[in-house]
Every structure is written in C-alpha cells, then in structure tokens.
Image (cartoon, rainbow, N blue to C red; front, side):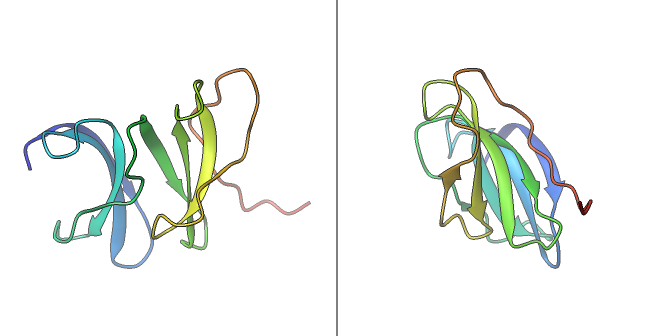
Length: 104
C-alpha cells in the first residue's frame, strides 16, 4: 500500500486507526490495523470522505466526520465498523469529533 497522507489515532489495546488516502483506498477512509502495521481493514468502505476518527474512552466506538450526506456530518460506529449512524443531522458542516469523560 503506497500511502499519500494520513493521521494516526491510537486506540485502546492492540488496535489503532489511521485515516488515509492511498492507492489501495483512493478516498479518505478509516482503517484499523494492529499496532505493528499488520491487518489493515477499511471499516468505513464507501465512496465518501471519512476521516478525523476519534476513539471513545472505552475503546468500543469511533466518532468520525463524513460527507456522505452531501455536507460534513459527525457519525459514530462500533470499533469494527458496524452500526454507523449520523449524530448531527444539520445543514452546517460538523467536523473533528471528540469524546469527553465528564459527568453531568
């Protein structure tokens, strides 16, 4: 895989995510892999931009930005890529999600 750009995002345990553009995945996609670089898996798999992933504090979910709904929205999904759903659903662009551990 010849990488053109990317952003590391360390998860929990032995996995991490990498947002990248590559010759293998021609659009920005969210890829998980082992910390040694083996086992890369595209967990978003669509034609849209998917990026700026952020692991949840418990490591079970990822929040990410995507333009699959015509503007940039924040989605959440399980760590394996299942259960993708739109959190923001508004007309303006929503970018760079993050998690908090603050309790109300």
